[in-house]
Image (spheres, rainbow, N blue to C red):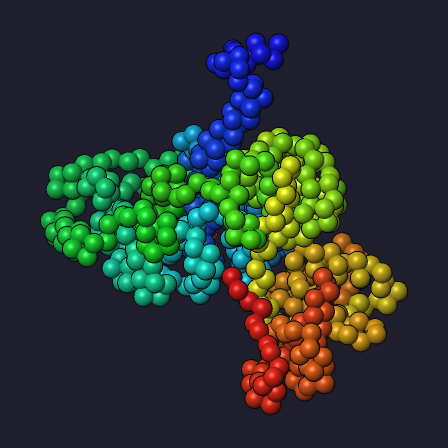
Length: 547
Ligand code: G4P
């Protein structure tokens, strides 16, 4: 029987059919991985990330009509609105994973929470992507948050595509924007599409690959796909001789400086293919979405903690990059988002949690799209699986099916804000402790205890909003009102056990333990740091932050 199926599969009777099946399975995994693109959009709030995301869904046929016809609050529901706080404040705190198919490719778009205040969640999402689209507002260029996010991408060597948005409105000159990108972030822009006319008097773009002119046409509120009418630039009837002349000069200049698309240097993180458009009116959306498929890298073999590459075709493995508790108030559950790195994930399969070596069955695996959850049965490298109530998983933990692997930890980011936290209701100490543990495990804030017999918790974050989320969740989910008071500490360092001992009695420093039991040193200010370093040169202190 086995032999028969082997022959049916084209094997000679001497070949082992089970070996043949393994080869076939591996081939499927490799080809499924090759058609995946996993990326995030990095931008400053208001640059147009939500609008572009929504337009991607329109072009992928996921929504029939873009919600630009709806109010902003309505549009927001396209992304993540899990927490009532988000709805109240009209912001998006939690990350959503959106999966859609476009040109036979499976696109995983991981949402980086967009708010003026920063949170560690945003950084962590970038640990799970293979590429990023940097969206710039044509009137504003590089803004503070774009810069911060770009630095994380650069440190991780994530290739970046650039989309200059809002070209339908008055803005900066395109050459000025190019210069900003090159000087402020050190990426050389290689324009793929080049605008004809200035921002605010936008006529269309020239696709530098074909040399053809694509006329800009508005669609009513951008509800439907933009019409694309192409012609030779010189034959375009809607542009004045002056605009034609200027465009031709600019195109020659680009050629002269060698700003041509170069896939290798893009993948190495040295150049950024650049596109120009208007997400609101849909113009240019397809160009950038096509670039995701044509230029952004597919998932590849990932290095484990020892630097060894684990092949995509190895059995299932992945790592947790985000934990979200109580997403669904009706279920009060907890979802660990796992980026698949190798193999095929199948719902129900037994996986091992590398840190605890505990195995569990993945009965509840979901994909998440806004408020909707649907069960996910199979996932391949590049995909994200949400594991519901999957035990004691923490950010950065590795999971595997058959063969063990330990992926490198997701780097912790040095907190900049440190506050004492106390329960306003002393009778609720147990819930308070439970809440603190949960928030630390999810990485909502970092939690430290000083070494006094009665631990005095300190919470730490990179952005004030993390504290707000923390206190909101403690009251809503654990029914504990908390008081948060700033400490005098502003810096965090690591040291070795001997120096830690010495630091116990040094002014300006405080020795604490994090929730995993690791000892950390808090320092009052840069002044105290240099004081300690000059007074106690034998004390060894290292920063904890690396991207
Ligand atoms: P974000 O997620 O990056 O924060 O930005 P979002 O997409 O919410 O866009 C911010 C504002 O910019 C929105 O206007 C949106 O309509 C507008 N916008 C986005 N892309 C373009 C574009 O290509 N051209 C123009 N002219 N505007 C664009 P809003 O007034 O805040 O909201 P709404 O009233 O339009 O919903």
